[in-house]
Image (cartoon, rainbow, N blue to C red; front, side, top):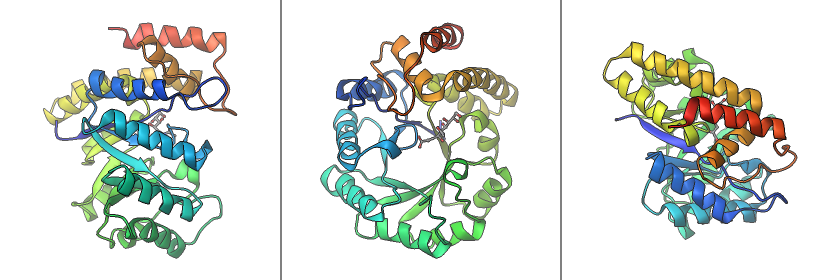
Length: 292
Ligand SMILES: CC(=O)N[C@@H]([C@@H](O)[C@H](O)[C@H](O)CO)[C@@H](O)CC(=O)C(=O)O
């Protein structure tokens, strides 16, 4: 399989919202030992990163690096609307922990100009010996980068690609066509097959924590030219994802991991803890789509 599959790593929290180190380590191990994942995207949306204090973010990066070692590729998402925090996190994960690749979400909330966004990225990566992958997720940040915006960001040789979580497949095709040597990792699990057909280098997503086997089979079928099999698998995957989304995304993935024997813990407030109904639905989803 030449296309790489990364899990957007979940973080395990205790009922009181504190970090559950043991559970987070179990999620890492499950991805490596059971999912045979190519890599982990640490500190992203799925890790509930944007609700965490700097010290907690640092502890998670440290735990994951300690647990994973060199067993899989690691990308540390250090983006923040506090540029100083992003630079502090970049310096910590690269110089203290040994991460080789960092990522940063487009700065959001204050409607930054593109020159301010370019400054943000160049500042984050300039003082560390690492490469950076832009994290573009317009639906959640409200920041849509144009093809020319990407071209300007990519002028920095340390900015090696993009985690593209966007339904705009025309822009995706234009990016692939114009930047054949930049890494494009696709972030919408429901649309993996169309993204593969446009030539992405791989995928990063939340549902791969529990559905990596199907995604790997889909990629293998695609690479073997069996589009019918690949589409059949995408249909199965999207039945699963629809059920997960309808039941509560991160809560349900954590409940599914618990059915797999992984202490995935709770989500962080204000996200609600699962209700008995959600727990029952998650068990049904596991039994229907994931039980071996
Ligand atoms: C908002 C969100 O969670 N997006 C996911 C997807 O994997 C998404 O959960 C999946 O496609 C189901 O909708 C990823 O793009 C996010 C991601 O990679 C990250 O955690 O940074």
